[in-house]
Length: 474
Image (cartoon, rainbow, N blue to C red; front, side, top):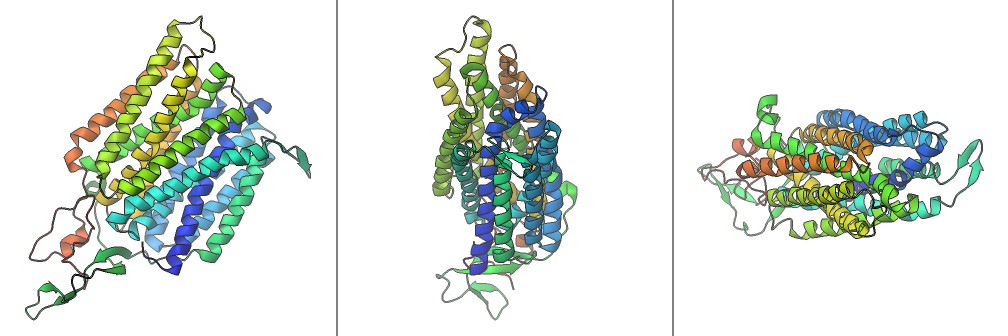
């Protein structure tokens, strides 16, 4: 990441965007079910609303990405996404009918699609050595938002007054709060965010000079590394088949889908399970998500420290293996509850549920961050925003199916089915990673091929920059 005043402004706005996404998640999700109940929403509508939120994000992500790749207008994408968030959250505040909540979350979901333009910008303005760490920092910011969100909920839950014709209470106040937060973020983006040209690419190179025989050689000061803040990359065209129909790319997309089904499935089932077995309400669920956020932040901090020593594919495999462990525990205790029907609110379930919840939340960053980082290294840098949009589409499909599948399954008879099927899904994800393990390394970029020297190209890996030290852009 190039350290300039403009880059700091972009990074601040980007980090704040993911922070607010985490806050929105933490203040709305714990109270959404209660909001629906207060509006006489039908049973199971919670899953529909959560899936609808993901659906519009899924559909809009490639559009934001395509605009960002073609025009470099990341600032415009950020402002437009914020406008959707403001409108959606204000509708959520107005409420009055469960169908309005549905429309509100549909509109807010369009705002989340801008993540593709943010991720594409990060991929183009960081080296491969920096990328996993920077992505980890953005995930860290999102989960700081998730961790602080319950604190806001403690305050918002105490509100009970009228603002003109609208009621401000524990259910509607999160919408008003997020409307204000996204408005502030929009102002900051307009003031601080500066676009970078869409055909520039940040990479580390060594100073070189051209000898008399035309060969590129290190200068007398070659031991001093310099950073070329912006390297203009030539436009290259790669077919859809060459870009996406490769085994390693397909595995990343499929594993992303499977992982999000598993992660959001448990996440969506957690609040109904806590109500079914423990009688928890909004505040207790807020503390549960707060504990999960703390566990995630710890893992993000670890990834930020060790990302240059551990390959992305190893971290990804560890995360998916943790998902297998999580759903194995889930399947076992849900099966025990199925056969022991005479047991109501068992005391032994609470610690097991907490352990399983912490394992799941710790798997989040171990899957999501190396997945995005590795995917950015095996696809074209020139169309990175669109490529990230495609990845977000598969992730969004998983976020849609997860809540739709899990929410109606939260009964003592159906929980073993939920756990068993998702356990199989995560096991398949682990098998796919293992069978493609040797191919899950960054491919030689076409730009590198055009710049190769007589020394040849070294095999790229997760720890090496995309430009080798003996290469320079003329």
